[in-house]
Structure formats: C-alpha cells, structure tokens
Length: 418
Image (tube, rainbow, N blue to C red; front, side, top):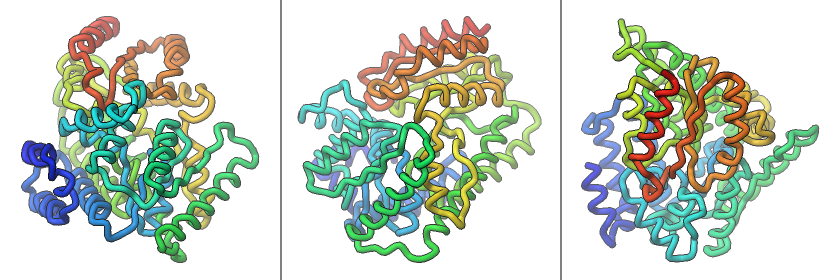
C-alpha cells in the first residue's frame, strides 16, 4: 500500500491525487474493515480521523488554516475549522521516503540547509503544490521561532493573513490576561476570514474535550511505568499528530481513552515481560521520522526507551467554565519555554518517575531552542549521576544521518551504563 502511494506521489499528477476525496474514503474504508493492520485499535482510530481531516483541507470546500506546533487548536475545533500541520506533514513525507523532493524544491528557492528541515520540507511541499494553500497561517511564538518566520514569509508570498499568538517568555502578573486578549483577537480574526462564527458553548465543549484528553494521557503515562507496558516508544511518538492538531476535538479524546483501556487490558493479561531489560532510557526531543533502526537497535542491545519528553503532560487541569483562561494557562505552562531550569527540572522528574538508567537527546539540526541548552542539561544530569548521550542528526533530512556513527555512539553509551 505504501509503495503504491509513493509511486503515484512521485508522478507529476501527485498533487491532483491528493485532492481526490475518493482516495481518503478508500483509506478510511480500509482502516474500518481491518484491511490495514495497526498495533492498537486507538491507532486505527487516529489514522481514520487523520484521513478525514486531510480530506477536508484538500477538497477546498471549507476554509482551513495552517497551524504551527503548540498553536491552541481548541479554538479551531470549537469553530469547526480544519487545521493542517506542515510539520506533521513533513514527518509523514519523511516516513514515506518522499521528503527529498520537497527539500530540494525549497533549497532551489534559496532556503538554506542550516534551516530546520521540518520547515524546509513544508516550504518545498507548498511550492511544489503538494501541500494545500490555507485561508490563513496561524502560529504560536513558542517553542519555535522558525515556524513563526516561515509562516510570516509564506503569508507575504501568497497574500494570506498571518496570525501570531505571542506567548510571553517570562511569566508575570499580566501574562495570563495578555494571552487571553490575543486569543479573543484571534477568534475575531478567524470569524472574519472564514465567515464562521464561534457558537455559544462550543469553546467550553472543546475545553472539556481537552481536559478529558489530558486525564487520559496522564493515565497512559502512568500505565507506561508498569514493567509489562507493551507500548513502544515508536508507537508512542506516532500519537504526536494528535497532540499538534487534535487537542479540543472529541476524536482525540476517544483515541486516548481507547488507548488507555487497551494498555490496561494488555498489561493485565501479561504474565511476564517479553524480554528482560538491561537499561531503561528517557528520550529527549523528537526521533528521526525517515526509515531508521535507532530504537530497534537499542532494544537489540537490551535497552529500551520507556518514555519521551514530548509525551509529558505539562499543563494542569482545565476549567470548562473559564475556557479562555484555561487555554491561556496551558500556553504559558510549557516547561521548555522560559528559563532552562524549567526543562531541567522536568527531565529530572521524568527520569525519577520512570526509574531510567540514562538519557538520550536527539539533537535535530536547526532546532536551536532545544540544542542550545545541551551543556546545561548534561551538567545537571551528571550531578544526579545520570549518563547523558547526545545523538546529532536530523528528524527529516536523512542526508544528515550516519547510521554507523550513531550505532558506535550508542554502543559506547551502553558500555558506560553496564
């Protein structure tokens, strides 16, 4: 199936294929009737939801927006506005082995390789007409300024509105009200651009979905502490699609509630772990999304990533009666935004909660806000007696991936843990 998709995507009419609703309906039917196999029912539900959302943005009948990571999608789900995440689309392109076409397209238009490959891939996908042109570009200033600059540039090129949610780095007395004011302005702008009015009660409904999702995510994270937890790190990373586009939707809530039930059932049915672990590891930042065997190689060596920084639930309970305040509070809560001590403390907490033997940071080329603090993270973890490995690489551009060197680094790290 994937080979067939890549075959047609590579043709000149590939962009036209993506605009055919029948393609997505066929995919949904294949998921629904178990013609495509997934490790969990929750994964199948997520794929079916993703196909439905993608069909909406490509059929051009409804206004839709591009969103950067961490933009508050509760607003969009409350208004019924589909969202397209170019960063998730870049990860999908890389998983299909198709990212090279988009990267070369961006580079041919002077987007240099020192920029983040998530964004270069997104730019190339839009310039080559594979990615849909939105009604507006919506970005949040945290955590990544690269997305803000890319969205602003594309908005000027294509003469589209650009909405920026400016999240203060320092949390002061008026920070919450400052973000709330911007959320109100964004809602007004979206209503004007799309012609869709936010109905009474819809924002509360979206926040209720987000709060239910938060609780389900916390339950899953707690289940992953169990020695019989079957969820692999690669499977866990696949749900990031929902984290970036689905928060506030009923679909995301159902997916995570289903996953929690499935994990609980499988843990209860298990009598012994599949394989005794020598080492438990914590993964910082993201993994590469093109074909690679890093996580599998770790497992072969008796080491397993038992949790990932990106799956940590960093915000507190959301009050349905105060939806804008709850959304603004979530936006201000991210531990990687602000002083580095916030991120370091969370890393220490996760390392203790999951009783890990070591920490791996995959340093994505071009991700300055994540990689710039590595020295301070390493020094802090050393004081805690936690070994720390930095793997330099690229999440999207496999030209920056050297498997032999990565395996050598991993071997040395595991020897240090022994």
